[in-house]
Length: 370
Image 1: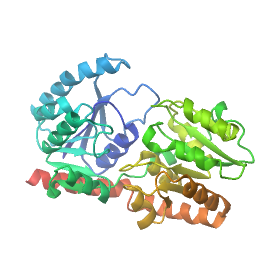
Image 2: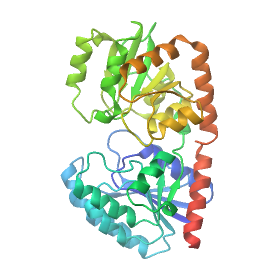
Image 3: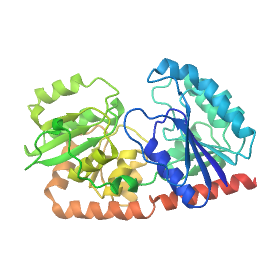
């Protein structure tokens, strides 16, 4: 079967790579249509073809990307419509107001993975366009049962919603893990390390984590690694007011896969105190590494902790509960070992990419038959 995976803005190169690799391993002819990722090295394709056919002359300008987007979408849609396209699987469609019409240039069957069930902070116009975009799809993939429920509330018929988990990033765990850490991480010898990794955005609850850190033992260090997509001055000021500025280390940039592996290998605990989410690539990286997890009890995070026992769950926004969970996990070597083993089992089983590929292949086959 021919499959075209489409991620115009290259929002999730690790996910795209893992999905395409897993599908190619099943014998499918896979093309990833995306843009150049300009912030760090990306994985070399394994068995699939990557076409950087979006925003080739836009650089990092968001305005130029927005202007190039419609023409690039139409070019790709017409190319696929002119051949034996098979399945078109969209990962991200960043401009719902125009994408709702542009996707009609693409042949059917069309699939969309709703990594975010709906655009965050969207106004009524964008939300209406998002619903119309979802209606143009023959199938919509959610990563969890709560995600399916939210899509149904947006008007997507249940028969079109398919729950396929986000796979654990084993290709990152296969990195050597011996890359040097950024000097901004400071000296971590003798410290217990809580890692907060990924793009820094308000909904991820970093403010709650900083408040919680103040209630942990003084040998606990919070390592914040990721490119800011918000102002962090107030967070840095707050850590100073709490007297823990020296215990919050900031590495505010994209890091390579090799560096990422080194940070995950060094972490004693990964904390993801998100206020709301469907799923997270950071969570699925931690599963692959077998790193103990403390998560907010929200969205697909609940399944990881409650069903698979691979995380401690705390209420979103509750810094006292988060601090208590961090202290308990950091102080209990046996609990860390239990969480680590449960994470590895989950990564090798329900969150393995072979399982993801099997479910995805089944979806494609059903769509092609119908």
